[in-house]
Length: 67
Image 1 (cartoon, rainbow, N blue to C red):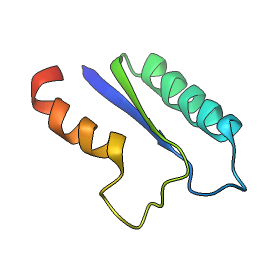
Image 2 (image 1 turned 30 degrees about the vertical axis):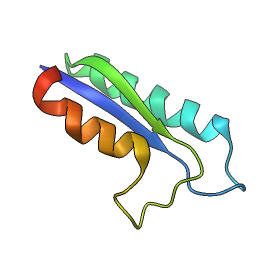
Image 3 (image 1 turned 60 degrees about the vertical axis):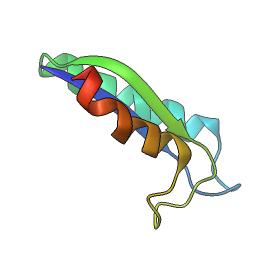
């Protein structure tokens, strides 16, 4: 199975370490379940209450082509 990884943090109170921890968890889960991560998307300092986050939108646009 193929999948993409998406990580985001929402404010200046969070940092790159939050992204690193999220991706570590995603890759750990994927490895345990035989999932191949084909691409990563990361949005920094973007609220989760809206879906107009730049890399979230790139991910949505890419999904049909990547998977």
